[in-house]
Image 1: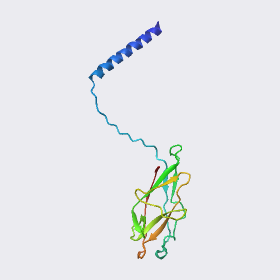
Image 2: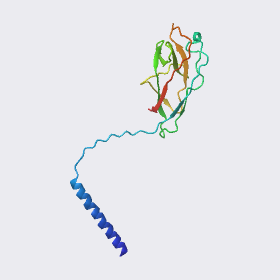
Image 3: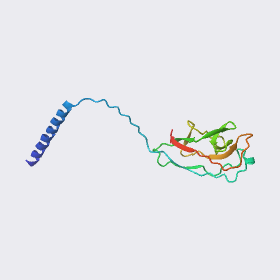
Image 4: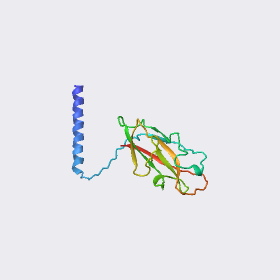
Length: 171
């Protein structure tokens, strides 16, 4: 008997709830709703750059080979990437200049820049907006940096700085 009473009470309460909902629904008006949703996963990798020190650089010895870095320019931890996603892409951004026909990272000294290279063959690594390079997380790009000067430029001895930002994203 107690069991039947509880079921009956539940049905009674449910029917009251439905009646109330119908009354509210009868007074409602349609509303056009536009919903924009951006679904974005966690960053695939965390990037830690290094502070590159070229040491004492002699203007007469800047030739695009001397002073090439030997230490990695960055470390990359891709532990947060989506499971099974090994194909990523890399972009280097910064203020650029053209020296001897190549786009390089600019310094504050006119005619002096920093060339970013693929460590495997010392070829120019493309820098700037829209220049994405695909890579696999199991084989990270080995980047090197080397000072370069414009042919015929007369550089004045001074300290120089350059900076770039590395962006890593899913392909």
